[in-house]
Amino acid sequence: MRQITIGNSGITASVVGIGAWAIGGDSNWGPSDDTESIRTIHHAHDLGITLLDTAPAYGLGHSEEVVGKALEGRRQDYVLATKCGLRWDIDEGYMHMERDGIRLMRNSRPQRLQEEIDASLRRLKTDYIDIYIVHWQAHPDFPVPIADTMGFLMDLKQQGKIRAIGASNVDRDQFNEYVKHGQLDLIQEKYSMLDRGAEEKFFDLCEKHTVTFQPYSPLERGVLTGKYDLNTPVGEGLAKARVKWFERENLAKIVELKKKWQPLCDKYNCTMTHLVIAWTAAQGADGNINVLCGARKQSQVADNAGGGLITLDPQEIAQMRADVEAIS
Image (tube, rainbow, N blue to C red; front, side, top):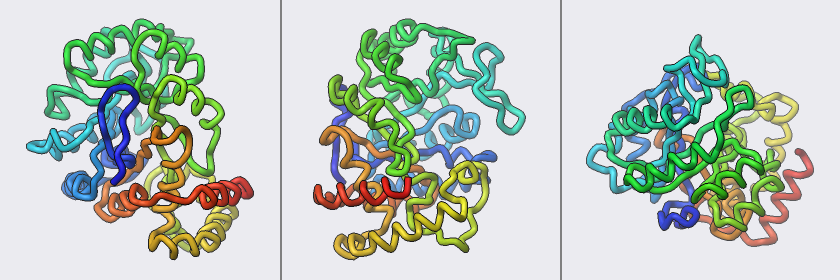
């Protein structure tokens, strides 16, 4: 598995990371088997995946709890990322969304972040977080200056509770505020070959400031694995239902894309999942992309890991881009 350095932090991690959103369960993903989730996390490391990403909001703390169990006796094997700024246990803040009758509130005030870091450390059964990421940014209806948030996070670094700072779901102005007030080492944004808007927004900034770009949902909730045809049931949970590519008309385009890329799969003796992850890792500044792929089954993480073992030729990267631009 290829390795990259996260920003200017000095932290080295695998080019492919495992995301633990689905491990939290809830209506987004349907029921989850905690025992299998723990086995999946362990198997990820066996395959060379060292970066593990979770968040308090995933299953309202459940994902962090499962990750904490998986890390017992193995903490040094993983680069652990979790998040802050999204709460379900307070009424103060901007209401981000309501799910399963629970209101999720955006609040990145230092006092609330202090509560969050302490709770996450307890659930994760550790005394430090490698990468601490602000999950969603403050809303104008409940403003919190990034200078205040970043100042607190820099204090956490000095205390040894976190090693690097990340931000997720930002815009360009917010990115610039983060780097103005401290050391930002990673941003985590929605990005896939079918949804490339983040390229124009962030790739130049990440290169200029040596900030690692970490795409989430690079497989578009599984549709880019090539495992779905027009007759395949989509499965439980709301997460896939929100992806337009699972609609029959659009899914037909993905099926044709898989056929077009079969010669590449044959050349590299790989799956479509491997190709898509390898393509994603090759975007942006060289060596500055960490591809985050969700998994809660051993078979899923094994398929994801293969993408970190392939290096595509420049001509192949360009042709794959042309193919997806033609349908998206």
